[in-house]
Length: 107
Image (tube, rainbow, N blue to C red):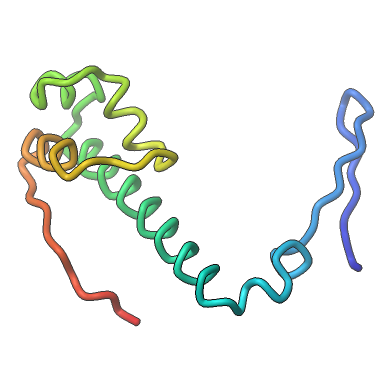
């Protein structure tokens, strides 16, 4: 196993592994691939929302105010770490002057 070891400032040894080393044969399973695609889509959506907000020179607070929700909801949405309801997504899209659309996966 080819891994990389580093020493942090507090002298804690961290070992880094490649995705192949971590996931190995699981990467070939349909369940893993489906989960990976779903997570990738969530992260792409989060990034698209953040870029749209920044392109309009708006703060998270301004978007939240237009969408009638707390700023923390916009922050969680942009983090990509949480699921989002269609209602919340629609309200944020509307606040950004955008629409929700389904597009066919390029695969």
